[in-house]
Length: 173
Image (tube, rainbow, N blue to C red; front, side):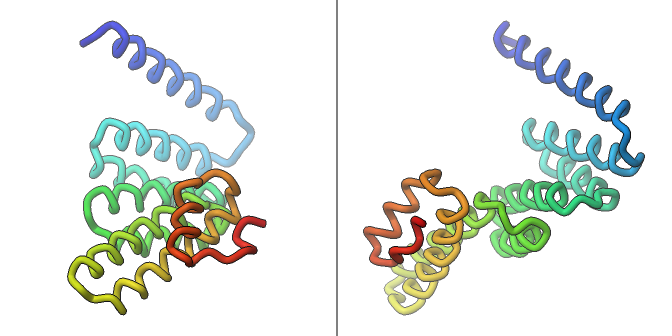
């Protein structure tokens, strides 16, 4: 293992240990502490590519977590795993759940748009223009919301909205 990677692992491990100590000392409910620890374990597993372990940890975290913003973040991470595993339907459902918990997550909207835009391109390649237009319109709808929530953060999406003719003047304000 290269020395730089050993340092990164040491830093990651040290941060995890410190974060867990801080959480244990915080004056919050025990369930919230456990939820956070499961969430951190899920992030670590996801970072290592162990998606099944990550999903198990996230599920446990969701059972304990009461904070809507934190639940939304956990659901978003689960959706990212589903998306990377090719289960787009489950990813879309999970992004929707994440947005119900916390509607101010532009990355959920961005990723949903990626799925819709991909489907539009596939339909277009298959010669299904009406179906492609429908998917592209859905992508434009969620991407416009993402751009409103995170102005200037998704320049490639803003460009796509403009060049595809699916932009609305109020998207950027």
